[in-house]
Amino acid sequence: MFRKILLLMMVLCITVLTFAPVQAASNLKMLTSSADVSFPQSINFKVSAQSDAKISEIRLQYSIDMLGFAQVISEAYVPIQSSTAIDAQWSWDLTKIGGLPPGTTIRYQWLIKDASGNNLKTPLTEVKFDDGRYSWKSLVQDKVTIYWYQGDQTFGQKIMQATQDALTRLAASTGATIQTPIRLYIYANSNDLRGSMIFPQDWTGGVAFSSYGCIAIGISTSNLDWGKGAIAHELTHLIVHQMTFNPYNDLPTWLDEGLAMYNQGPLDATFVTALDQAIQQKMLVTVRSLSSPFSSYSQISYVDYAESYSIVSYLISTYGKDKMFALLDTFRQGSTYDGALEKVYGLTMDSLNTAWQATLK
Image (cartoon, rainbow, N blue to C red):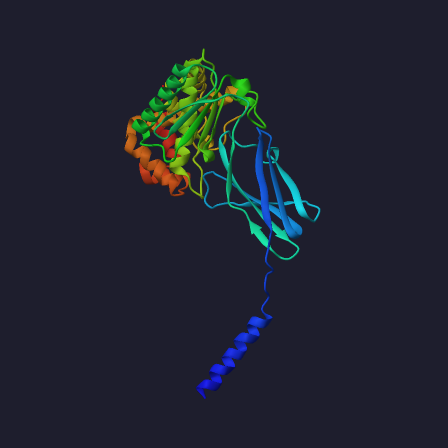
């Protein structure tokens, strides 16, 4: 009986093997692949492939190296005329996503299929979205890389020192430190900086691409004092974003901007005057209102920024560094604005507003 069962199983196996689909031997292969950067507008991907059978489909998969909660892989179908030898290309128009910061890493691979059902997936390849319009110099210290093209080595060293000083001040006042490596691109002026962006604002002098670990600032060799403040401001945005990154909630604007202003240094006269006038005229904006984006009108925004600086200064001077670090850590856990303040300080935004305004003269 056992032999009959064994014989039957062998016959069934032979039958399955006889009718199972067998993929034909394939000569499908990629010949060349490249990615040409046209900074800042586009990246042009090219591929050449051949096969014994006509190539029927080519797709490009690509992803961006950035801070996120999950890996996002995009896919583009490349139009082709079916043939045994193909030269294909696909251009990624970056104006549709608002552009990418310099130095961004893009990973990509080709998926190729022919008429015989053969499939080819090429190895992952990296391309750097570099701003090739300038000859960049670089300097590395710990987790910081500085890039610049105008100015000597001493200028680059002063930029690095300003960056390290800003990091030291931020850690001393809040406990916040670098979580992942960052890079700074120092353009020679604001016009050059804006030329690196797709949709720049006329007033843009510096920007932190927090999700990319990148800062770009226009600093001339003759305006280094201003540049040090700008570096501290944008660097604080980037580090605080790293410290509080979560899928549930952002920081209130007054805390994000207030920390950046505080780490930048004492308020300059424009902001001091705006704050004094708001106090005298009893036109202060409440802490709760300052949680939303600031006004686009410069005169009003001066008050918004000055108040944010004053609120953060009050919290740090009254309760200390450890409490501020605890506040950032609570926001990292996805807390609400009032919930974070109540947990760390025992205050709501309204009671914080009352306590803070009571200290103003």
